[in-house]
Length: 417
Ligand SMILES: Cc1cc2nc3c(=O)[nH]c(=O)nc-3n(C[C@H](O)[C@H](O)[C@H](O)COP(=O)(O)OP(=O)(O)OC[C@H]3O[C@@H](n4cnc5c(N)ncnc54)[C@H](O)[C@@H]3O)c2cc1C
Image (cartoon, rainbow, N blue to C red):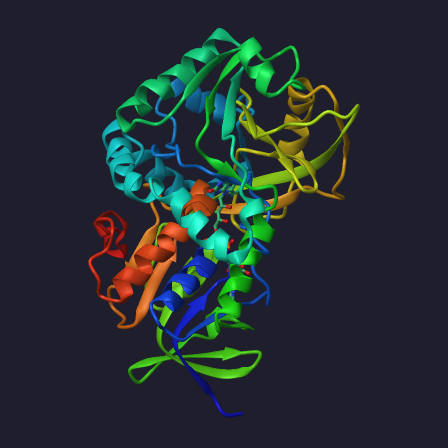
C-alpha cells in the first residue's frame, strides 16, 4: 500500500484533538485527524457535564485542611470516592497533586489559566457557528446550590476569591433559586448563579459537529492506533486503517491515554486521572431543569441533557483502567432525588465512566515536545477539557505556526515536569 502525506497528524479526536485539527487547518495546513475509535467524542468528551466554564479560573486543588482530607480518606465525603486497592499505584501522583495545591500555587495556576478560560466562550462560538451547532450551546449559566449555612459559607468563600477576576456572579435566596429552577426540592436553601457560562445538552454531538466541520473544510479523519507513531527522517509515520501516513508534525491529544504514547518517546508526565460517572434519569410529573445545578455539599451536578437529566459525579481516585464501579453513583443518587424530588427512573443500563486527565498543577500541557522536532503535546485538560478544547486548539496552532501566541504559553510547557 502506498503511503499518503499530510502536514500535521492530530492524534485523538476528543474535543481537544478535534479543536486543534480545526485551528491548524485554518492556518492552511493539510491535517489528518486520527482516532482508534474511528469517530469523534467517544471517550471523556462523550459524557461530561457539558458546561463551558468561563468562571473556572481557580483550579480544583487537593484539600489542605486535615479534617477534609480525613473525611475523604474515610469515605465520609460523598464528593469523592477512593478505590483503596488503587492507592499504592496512585499515591505518587496524589502526593504531587497535594504538593501543587498550596494557596500560592493555586493562585499561580489561576493567573495562568485566566488567559485561556477568558476566551473559552468566544472560541466555542467561533466553531459552533460555522458548524451549524449554535443550538448545542445554551445560555443561562449554572447554579451552585447549598443546603446549609456551612454550604453558603463555602460558596461565598469562592465568590470572594473570584472577585478580583471580575466574574459576573448572582447571589440567590431560596426563592431566587426556585424562580430559576422551580422543580428543586426543600433541601435547597440558596445558591449562586454563574450567568455567563454556556452549557450543552449533548457534549458528544458538539464535538462531532466540530469534527464534521473539519471534514467539510477538507480535513481527513481516519481510524488508526496512535501508538504506531514512529519518527522517520525529518518527520513522522503512522499506520492507519487507510494505510501508512507520513506527516511533518504530530500533535498528541490523547487525553488520559497520552502517557501511553509519551512514555514510548521517553517522556514521563505525572498524568493521573480523576474518574467520574454519569447516569441519565427520566423526570416525573413534567419536571425539568433549565440549567446545570451543583449540589455543593454533596459534590455532583444534575444537568438537563438531550437524553434526560444527567447526574455527573465528582472525583473517583482509581487507576485509569480499573473496572467501573456503581458505588459512587449509588451513593449520590438519593441526594439527587432530594435535589429534584421528581427525578424518575434510571435510563442507562449502567453508569458511564469517564477519566479526567489531570496533571498535578491542574494546568494542561500545550506546546512542543522538548526532545523531538515536530512532536507537540495538547493534553491534561482535567475538569475543563470541554471548556478549553477550542482555545487550546488556537494556542497550539499559533505556536506551531511560529506566531506570537495570544497568551503566555510558559505555564503550559512540557518542560515544567
Ligand atoms: C464526569 C465528568 C464531567 C465533566 N464535566 C466537564 C464540564 O462540565 N466542562 C468541562 O469543560 N469539562 C468537563 N469534564 C472534563 C472533560 O470531559 C475532559 O477534560 C475532556 O473531555 C478531555 O478531552 P480530550 O480530548 O483531552 O480527551 P478524550 O475526550 O478522552 O479524547 C481522547 C481520544 O483519544 C483516543 N485514543 C486513545 N488512545 C488512542 C490510541 N492509542 N490511538 C488512537 N486514538 C486513541 C480516544 O479514542 C479518544 O477519542 C468532565 C469530565 C468528566 C469525567
